[in-house]
Amino acid sequence: MEPILSRNFNVKDAWTLPVAESRGAYQTARKVLTSMKPEDVTAAVVASNLRGLGGAGFPTGKKWQFLPKDSPKPVYLVVNADEGEPGTFKDRYILERDPHQLIEGILISAFAIKSRKAYVYVRGEYAEPYRRLQSALDEAAAKNYLGKNIFGTGFNLEIVAHRGAGAYICGEETALLNSLEGGKGYPRLKPPFPAVVGLFGCPTIINNVETLACVPPILKNGAGWFAGLGSPGNGGTRLFSVSGHVKKPGVYELPMGTPLREIIYAHAGGLRGGRALKAVIPGGISAKILTANEIDVKMDYDSLKAAGTMLGSAGVIVMDDTASIVKALYYAAKFFAHESCGQCSPCREGTGWAYKIVRRIYRGEGSLKDLDTLLALAKNMEGRTICVFADAAAWPIQSYITKFRKEFEEHINNKHEARISKFETISKF
Amino acid sequence: MNHTTILNQLDSEAEKIVAKYDEKRAATLMLLHLAQDKIGSVTPEAEAWVSKWTGVPAVRVREVVTFYSMYHQKPVGRRHIRFCTGTSCMLAGHEKILDHLKKKLGGEGKISLEEAECLCACETAPMMQVDDDYHGNLTEKKIDEIVDQLK
Image 1 (cartoon, each protein chain N blue to C red):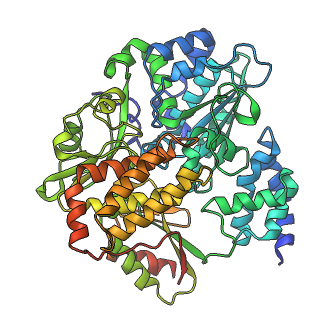
Image 2: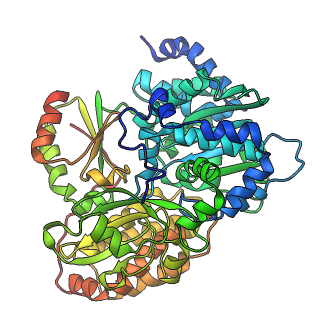
Image 3: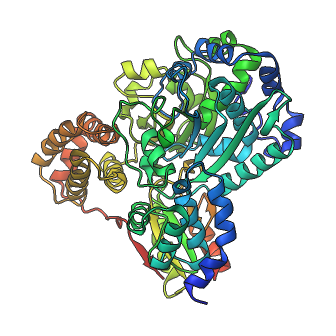
């Protein structure tokens, strides 16, 4: 397969404008802005079956069509570059290695939704990706690919790069808006949806980095071409972030719907040291775990949903037979307890208690009853909060315990003593 | 130099940052980053300075400071390390490397260490961030080399 999103990842200095231009950057934007109507661009994105690649998988063109037709308020495009889902690192590759691809995607998308201002919210820890992006924005502005009267069409666009400050929840799009407005990253109740009431109370479209990077190729090669790359209803390719116990961890661009087995064995080189596969998390830490017998599944939104899990951010975490599922749940529970924003009681209390109970089990101080307590707790967290964070925290608990119950019971019965990691501490040396 | 003096010298930079946003309160996070970079932590003086520029009441600025893990109310070390404890780093055996790092840092006094959630560089697990920079595929030997350079 010819790489599309990753075609410049290994080209030297592709993040600089001269190299990006030599690889065709901004030619599609020029064609679109000078020859197409905004509605036609949106229609192409709808027809391409492009779906939100941050994790939710909502059809991108449909999201754009939710914008009110005749609002007197400005429309904002907000780019979600707050990559934080454990096991995911693909947006960092785009920001660091091919930021002009993203900027061109923003330019075409802003034209389609009639936005004059875009904000890119980059995760705070991504200092170098942020610098690369800012440098690329400066270069693009200097050549009038951004700014006023772009390509002589009268279209204006300003893009502001913004930094978060270390909070996973800000990847949730309404938390991101509150954070961008200068507040705590608390998710908002929906409706109203951001397309109607978003940033500063104005109509706003929030799209992920990878999603927007797909837009130039769609407009260049056609919606039908893009739709044909994936599986039905799931257009295009996907950047799979593969990590854990594989020989070759990394980012792999493959068609939507590529079987998980093929990703692990044909692309990521199979398991280290020829060990046996034990489990796979297919879509970032929030996705339900799959056992070694469940990997003959197509990696697209609909197939993984049918398999009882989700594609999410396409962060594939592979575990071999040396991995402890109890330990994996301990680290997952620690993550969710740390990152719950604290706004909704079921999540704030639920993640805290889940962490305490899992820690107790992990240390060898648990009882068999704890497993059912955890399952009941997880059930009571699902669907009871403003955003899906609580659900995401519940899914690892449910799937790890249900699918590996024997291992948990053995751990409890054998009173394993396990090391405890420090929780949110800064030590000075 | 006291903090207020340093902050007042950042006023022209702050003005440029605020001008990028359609509402000045949106500059809060960026101004907090700037203040912390220059004075080493977010002090009450820094909160007041951010409040002055954004129109956000100082008490709301304090809420923001305590919500996000990257803002520190007390100074961290001259160099600050975030050691990733995400699932992929755990699978790659980060605990042994972390223990070694702690031993290596013992008694140093100028370097602070934080156990961080996933820093999204799982392809290089185990990994850590020293100030702005990511360091991956860590081994005990690599930790020694990095820390020796920091000292």
